[in-house]
Length: 166
Image (cartoon, rainbow, N blue to C red; front, side, top):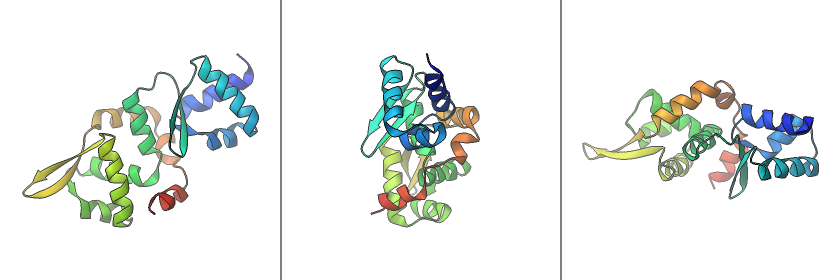
């Protein structure tokens, strides 16, 4: 394993769920060079790559599927704010979440739907009102403890939130 391999591996291990551009910025490597090394690390099972629409995230191989979903949410500002609001006070109504995260209802709705789809948050009817509850609290607690402050203090830019709200 070369110095570059281990440098990239260390960046990914300390920043699970990191995106390509962040690795490029942190490592100082150019696009083509970084692509080459990431491909090699993935092929050898040293890193895991999660490819999704409009984004690819890189993880150490020991990160589980459940953990990667939580990490993905925690690395974006609005989903992280929603999860932290629900950790602070479980069972919030939609309007309370909107107020708590200080984003438009459409933006909150978009991310809340994703969190429900990813099974990190669930809905329950209480007194004929829809309330949101954290479903993956144990995974969230473990990850926050293992990776804080890095995971919680290095969100991707708010630009992604703006684009996704359209």
